[in-house]
Amino acid sequence: MDLAPDIRIFFLSIIYAVVGLVLLLIAFWVFDMFTPAQLGKEIFQERNTAAAVMAGFFVLAIALIIAAAIHG
Image (cartoon, rainbow, N blue to C red):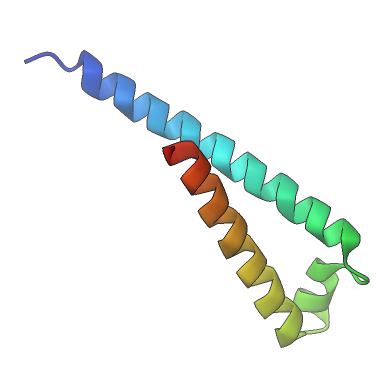
């Protein structure tokens, strides 16, 4: 039983996950730059539920786009 293809697939999956996470963080950072307030401050210090929901939906949408782009 040859494990080389399985190990290759495993490492490629890890690489794609890291690339997707980096792209997601960059997209969120850009999104945060264009919002009127700092989302981190609004969500965690001010307890702004609307900002948290907006950020959550943005992250979900970008994650779906990145997953579709990586999956092909």
